[in-house]
Image (cartoon, rainbow, N blue to C red):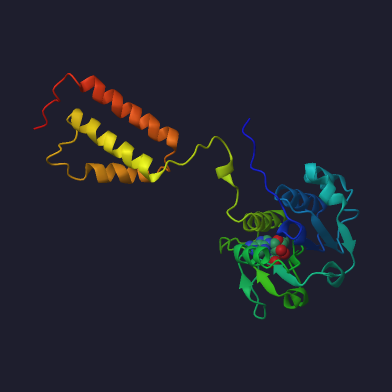
Length: 263
Ligand code: SAH
């Protein structure tokens, strides 16, 4: 099995700083789904402000929807109001589908995540509203920014946990820098040096002349085009050796033959 890329998260990374706050959530299943959305992206701090569902940490629907994120669900804190939820935070983002007349600056999830990931002194919170009525104005107005997920203008209201998933995903991408380090998965050889690649081009050119594909008196743009093609691939030493081997084989197989005419 190909190992997945490992990601180290230093203590002050966004993974340990970002808090998810749900205000007056009605459906226990949504609380469980948010826990799952968070854990799949590496976040763990969940705070519930005055939930409208009974016993959301143990409700069977919440537990079922949390699935393997039961730890995030059951470690969630329940607090009576938003002040308690934001205690210790120094940057709060109201997450809302609704733009309002009086609102803090409107950011995308990506802009927020990039800001939160790069400013390591920030202890940020993303604050989500109730499924039916969203966030009350007084909470939005108390936040530093409003995060709006730019959705279909004709139907822009996501399910609460899906909105949390978008936020968690963007925050993860920002925290990881380039996102998944796909470059660390699978086999990697040493990059070929410029002189190795130059030698291979010379060799390849001779082979192409030998088989009459390249007319030495009228080469046109064949070699520059091939060089451009190879330049896009990030050649490794071993690959350069293979290409030289092919050129050598072409040349030895044509050594006793006259190259075909190219009229
Ligand atoms: N009818 C409510 C929508 C509630 S959806 C309203 O008008 O606000 C539940 C929560 O999901 C919202 O409070 C918000 O936190 C989040 N959400 C849903 N869609 C969103 C969007 N397009 N952008 C930002 N947050 C969204």
